[in-house]
Length: 131
Image (cartoon, rainbow, N blue to C red; front, top):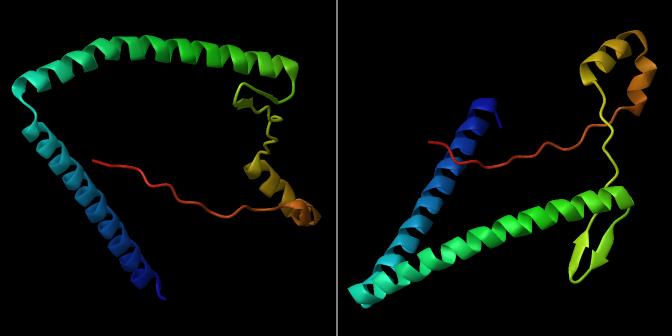
């Protein structure tokens, strides 16, 4: 398929993805509206009060979890090995090796034999929201 045709196909698929995501948002909004329609104003107020009250507890607990998670990570880094306990697995990973590709490519011009040690991973795609 020619480059322009492929680009057109990709744009069509992206357009379809956006349409489907918008449809999902519409369905979710309709559901929330219907739920709110069966609740009295007093019930809605009470639900909002509960969300506010628990929101503070939840935020505090998220902060505690974040702090303890940092402590676990630091402990595992010091220990130097993965640890599994209480339904959680703190996975220790060796530091990744990085190479300066630009400089190595320059070196390879004078020493092409180094290219036999070069590998390249598969490309990947992530989808991000834009405005």
